[in-house]
Image 1 (cartoon, rainbow, N blue to C red):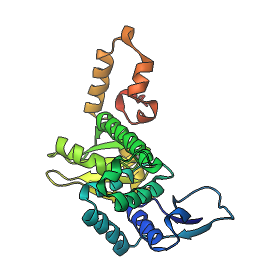
Image 2 (cartoon, helix red, strand yellow; image 1 turned 135 degrees about the vertical axis):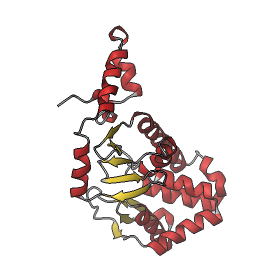
Image 3 (cartoon, rainbow, N blue to C red; image 1 turned 90 degrees about the vertical axis):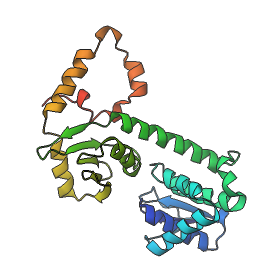
Amino acid sequence: MHIFTCTRNYEAMLTCIYVAWASGFGHKNIKLELEPFGQYSIFDEYTHVDADTALAQKVMDAVNMKLSPYFYSEIAYISMGYEEDVLDIMYRMMLYGFTYGNKALNMVQFDEIARYKAIRKRIGNEICRFKEFSRFHRIESGAYVAHIEPKSNLLLALGPIFQDRMPSENWMIVDDVHKEAIIHPINQNFYLRILNDEELENVLASERENDEYTDMWKVFFETIAIKERENPTCQNSHFPKWTRKHVVEFMKDS
């Protein structure tokens, strides 16, 4: 088996797909994996692929023009997933797409398409949770900062949602896991920024600064709670504990 590997970077992932497709080894003899991965197999041949903007663009153009923008958007959507096999699933989606056309996305008789559907559903549920449960802190400059720790790389999906909600505010959403942030200047479009360790530490410090709105929200949450109607099982199903770390009503005062 010929295994092509790359880092978990969208441009690198598309480049890896291009290189694997052009290798001529045959689709059945190819597998794509994201780095870092488990133990090497002595029976497989590994090829690391670096990001190449030109090759990545060729994949984008091929899918958009020969299939459809919708097909491309579905590939981009599941690329946010944390699943180890997500890159190989993207590759198989394209393979079926160029064979059967856009209808391939609904051909769940293929295991890879059924897997794509499952990954897509999980990502959608995760986006929905952080769309509803992200909490902002107002820092000294007057800007609002929210911290999240998602399993998937969701920032670019969350950006348009909060830009529509808060168009006239300066705000930032920080992904502490992937060390990225989306920044929204007042009345402008948001943009993505990769954070170095020093920048990440500076924005992490912002969460330790309580503001009057955070305090008011905690009081409100505690006031409306009805102890007799507490249902931890139901709450955990709708609001999993792993999503609560940066939610102010669950944060203990220092």
